[in-house]
Length: 455
Ligand SMILES: [Zn+2]
Image (cartoon, rainbow, N blue to C red; front, side):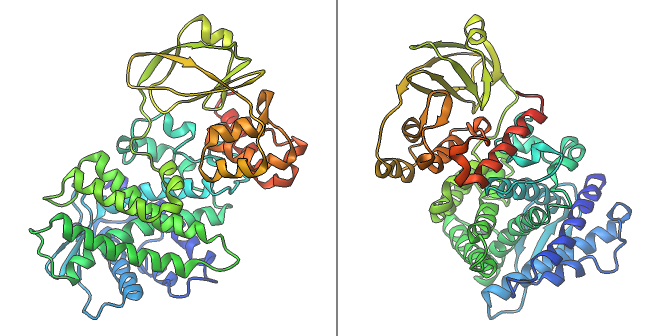
């Protein structure tokens, strides 16, 4: 119960802000209902009793069902809502004409929603003007989560609670809080809509094959699309809302795959993977962004001793955007996190890119340099559209990873970002003046690293 209480406190402040922030668009979305979920309950969730939590979970579940009805207009009575206050967590679960919501699972999705919401906000080039520098970088690529075990261990433990300050957008960053609130609502909404589909189609609880799961996901995904559309306005960045309501379902399915809790009986890991892949393919245009936010496996605390070698003498080596002296890298093996490390090295004539293979106690990494190239703007544009970031960077940068000219500043910035070299972009570079917003964002990333003692 202790952890549920802490989570409630986070949720509360978040949802209040959701209300005042987004009243101007998404007219169908029942903003007011989010405050009514807390009607009559003590203002401080730390004082809530078990009955208060039952009430809260039940109302939240009912609100999710209401939203499904609001957007999908099924011609049927709504299912009944039940709650489960036990320690075992399970996704919303339909049986006959009722859906049961587990309070523990609501807590879990809240935490996941907070992380995801923050990452969506930070990755959509929104700079947070706040003292906590780590918040300016998506957790999925920053040093905060990298210091942790996989996400499955990260959530629902002391670390999450102890770092609530870092995982929750600051009160001053209103839109960031809204994105967090919508991300967690999006996860719950998808799961609820999926169960509503089983209810509406009369699927029996003990007969759920891949076909029925697929149909239920299609229905749920349609609801998510409608909600996302209702948020988009011409002056808005509508990709932001698409991303929120597309990434939530993918994140929770990824989480289920990692935990191997596998939801309801009869679900297999392969079924979850297939369901997630369908959603990923459907949102093809958002695909790379979603994948960046929620990689298959998250970072591990295992370490590898890495021995470096190269075919040309590097002037500098960058590991996850952090500069390492080549003399240091050649003197002895470097001890590095075992997975997902992106390495780049520069010399006078080109750049070498590598990814740490990971998994073993020791590894040898050979850096092969490719020469800078001289391509036309059209050729560079083609590379960008094909997401060939290494070739794009070779065509847009020069010695020391600076942009070649102001004409190529935009593709240069993109390539640097996608190659995990964002921290190295110099925001004072005059050739980047035209894309100042991006540069400001990247400066935020750079200070994030410094804030965590990495230079
Ligand atoms: Zn199902």
